[in-house]
Image 1 (spheres, rainbow, N blue to C red):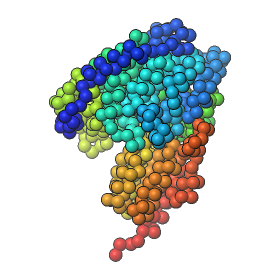
Image 2 (image 1 turned 90 degrees about the vertical axis):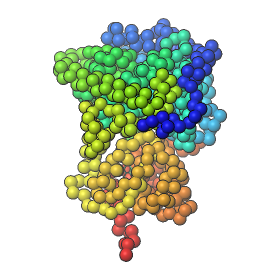
Image 3 (image 1 turned 45 degrees about the vertical axis):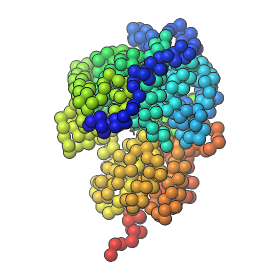
Image 4 (image 1 turned 30 degrees about the vertical axis):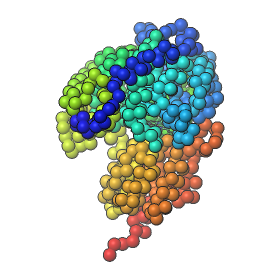
Length: 580
Ligand code: B12
């Protein structure tokens, strides 16, 4: 990798100038008061976390964000009130903004909307974040996007002292807005503003939103946290990390948290729930919840890192959880934290420490490799703008192959033998086996596979299944807009297109793709799976509705399960004209 490939533009902005511009704005934009800050009489959430660490208190995090701001404000208050009445303290809310919020107000109305919360004005930010004495964490779609600066200004004014999400900067994209220089410029300016606040404000980064979801080695995921901490040091602001969605192995989960403690990478923001383990109905998901939450509570008791723990409601794999479901999960967590204390002797500290040591050694190797590599590539490693943009353009897969801690091994995904393998790969292999059986038939088809958004496990699963049935996969990429896919279909004429979609845009995405293909006379069948839902345009219901029936009526092959792939492809293969 070299500068000419990564940053070919001659006149890129200078990180120092952007940070200075952001710092200058601090005379106008300072962290406002909030119900949380005054209730706890604290300067910021960072201080609150440090106090909890010193007391040995395990903190709790809830994630909310309904399309309707009124409903979100009620939820902010009611969840806290119900927990408080039951003696459970809820410390913080992660606020799920919609991806259209990533765009500046002036153009937001025309943007494609997902399923998250839309806060049209600064007053809406203030009303939300002051509805109860719970720390507001603006963790989604603020830093990393074109509207980073104006959303940071709004979040600060509302009294938020944790703002993210650097992880999303590296991997998320908003359909139709690919100007990474504009996104980086807005982000670095916002970081300058954060660094110049009188109260300490934490930059937040969820590594499972970032490269950790793509890395095959957890040592590299820890290494990325260390690298982001180095970048935060350049900026001059504290940084708190989150991890957890993809950490399904309990020992690795506990060891990762231990390693953060060992590296002094604290206080962190939260440990996210192990949401990829939610594969069943609510009754089955309670088991997944208690399994990971006990690990997280014990981790905080044994080696406090200031991460709040996050009991994800058990309906989250079906839809966006309702208020009463969030309350149930929080009360469950409160009780579980109380009950976790006598479990400590059940843990083998030596096993945790040994794995943590492997993670730390690998992470330091990754960090050194990466900084050396960037320097050799001609990137100014003292310039936050250059570092961020170069890493984003490299992408997780290339970074891991080039700088990962494991020994090079071109035969395996990731290009290196992982020191501590990420579990998502074995989970996908397991799902593929379950969907296809031991001896699946072979099918001679060429299938273009893509995702509409950042969720790529569905695609990885389809790719794996196609491989097992001898079909040819054409990579349509992740977060691919329909127009790009249409061009690819024109040039590569696949026998079928398989889409995995999760962001609540299933119907509009399908309709745009189908209409574009039809326009070019392409009758290629489309298979679509994932979360087949959408919030109807103009609706204020806040909850997305299933659009499976409409998709089927408009000619899509609706896939509710990976096992649907095989019979549909068999049908397509049977109707394919035989070549002479
Ligand atoms: C992992 C995950 C993430 C990861 C994704 C990492 C990655 N690189 O892939 C991260 C943390 C980054 C993430 C981010 C977000 N996520 Co998410 N995420 C999930 C989660 C936990 C799992 C989804 C998944 O990958 N499953 C693995 C696949 C293999 O299994 P499956 O989903 O059960 O799919 C089955 C079938 O549907 C089928 N299938 C899937 N696709 C296809 C396609 C074809 C052709 C076929 C045949 C079959 C098929 O195969 C599977 C086996 O049968 C779900 C919740 C859950 N537990 O399901 C939320 C979820 C999908 N996410 C959600 C949301 C809202 C988001 C965010 C917008 C949150 C935010 N505000 O930041 C962002 C997305 C931002 C963006 N720009 O797009 C929502 C979607 C809401 C909705 N549409 O109703 C969910 C449902 C959580 C929730 N309840 O709120 N997420």
